[in-house]
Structures are given as C-alpha cells and as structure tokens.
Length: 395
Image 1 (cartoon, rainbow, N blue to C red):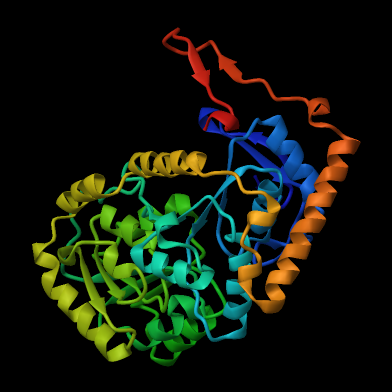
Image 2: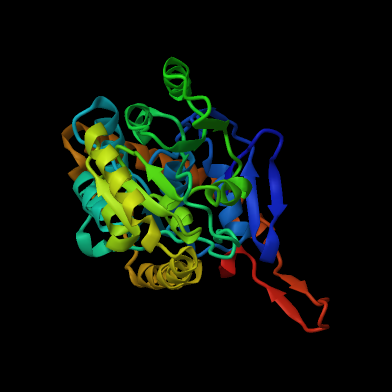
C-alpha cells in the first residue's frame, strides 16, 4: 500500500500476483503525504480486512503513511514490523522531532529490521527498542540486471562513475572538490547540480566531466559499465545499494567511510576514505593503482553469492514468524508513557482517540459487511501446468 503517484491510483496488479493499493492521498513534500492521524483509518481498515492481512510491515521513518498505517494496525490488534533504512542524528531540530515520532511508532512494534549493524545501533538509541527485537537484514542487488560489460574496458583512459542524488547528504559539495585528472561521468539531479556545473565551467572540464542528469533505474547498468571505478561521496548512509549495483557490474568502489558503508563490501572490493577532499583524492589514486588486479566477472560472481533477494526474503520470513509468536498487548499494556513526560501522555491520547474512532467504524460498518477478496487462481500457463498465485494475505 502506498500513496498515489501522478495519475496512478486505485489497485494495480504486478508480476507474480503482487497487488498494490495506490490510495488517493497525494504527496505534498518529499514524496510524503500530509499527516492526518485518523483520516487514513477507514481505508487502511478496509484493505486489511479485505485482504485478510496477518502482518503489517512498514518501511522508512520519514513516511507519514507508514506511521499512520502502523498506528491503525496496532489499534486493530495486528502484528506490526518496521524496517528502518536511514540514519538520523540526535542534536538538530528535525532529528529530535523524527526520533520522538519513531519512539511512538515503535512503542509496541512486534519486531523491527535494520539494513546494517550501524543502522541497528542508531535505531535502538533513537527509539528505545530492546536490541533483541531488532534484526539486521541487509539489502541486496539483482545480479541478473547488473552485469559487467561483455568486453573489458581499455585502461588508456580511467573513467569514474558517480550516480547519486545531487544533494548535500549525498556529498555533492565534497564531490566538487575531489575531481582529479581523470574522466568523470556523473548521473543524477538535485539542487547541488548547479555547483558541479559551475565547477566544470570554471576549470574548463567539459571534455572530462559528463553531466547526464537524472538516470532512470532501468538505465543505471548501462551507465555503470562505461566506467572503471564507482565513487560514493555520501556524508551519511545506512547501507547504500548503489555500491552493490556498481560491484555487481564489476566496478571497484571508492567511498566515504560513513555509517554502514564499511559493512557492505569485502576490503578488496572497496577503498574507503574519510569525508575529506584530500583523503578522497588519495583513495581514488589508490583505486586506480588497484584496477589491473580487478576482474569484473569474478567480482560479479562473488556478488551473486554475497547478496540475494531470495536470501533477504527467507530472513524476513523468520522475522515474521517471530512477530507471530509475540503476545498481544491491550492499550493499557503498551509503553507509550515511557516516551517522555508530555509526549507520553500525548501519544496515549492519540491512541485512545484512534481506538474510539475504530470502535465507531466497527459499529458503522461491521467487519462482516466488508467483502473479502478471493484468491487468484491462474490455470493457464505456457506449460499447461496449474499455477497458484497467492494474494497479499499469503505473502
């Protein structure tokens, strides 16, 4: 379930029987919907009952729809799982606000998932969750999509590829300072793109720095295979899938030593540097010296063994099994008061109102009056075999 995207709304069926509900809430800022607290309860309740959902799994701490859906699911007595994909600080106003919201959302979550051990430590500190409730399941990469170039590139001209959103958090300002005497291909867009273009004009680097603009994900592989090295200049990262995609394409990676990045690749597949221009230039120079030892196909084969979405699915299923075994808590047993002096009382009030609203909806439209969606049974296939595609409640 997600919000509407442009003219995409309603229910869509994807490959393999996956069903996506694009609810009619439109994003208003950074792909987030306007917080409503209670307005989403009727539609969330209807979807959960129609699809006979057993577990509600929310993603991303900045998603208002995720926080509201988990709150409604807890009110209705469902098991809930949350995955945190980002790192946040503790001092700035935005982080303080976000951490308090996360405390509320995770106050009675069944289980939580983080994408790296660094991310787990950050989430436990921010939310106050018991560490034994938080599992580490890294992201993965589609190695069938991200493959090396059929023919090894010539080493006459070293090409460094950067594909990233050109924003402060992704180190775009740092990138401006580290462009050495090699060719750069920069894919991505954002407010910091102007700085890169100004740097290119100022130093007359048009022949060595190619600015591609936004690159669709379907074309990322075709850009990666044009380079020898991938550069990641992020100032904070919980994991960084872009590094996996580059390594799967056979590129040696140079990256800042931040967040969960040191956990992602073996030492012989990545060169780490401090987020400092001088150290970054030294790391790029070291990576160029290591290029003759890099076998892109061998690196791709190693990535097949290291990261797999099938492995991620199996490990996530284990977390779901653990969530099923968690005991149900009523509203009085949930630990909202521990979220702070005034915040704890406010969170309790929010949940009480949500519980009363849910009770009203139960009277206005009982569960038995909501039509349950039948399972999809596909009986035709090219091989003539019977195919069963599970609905969302079976996934």
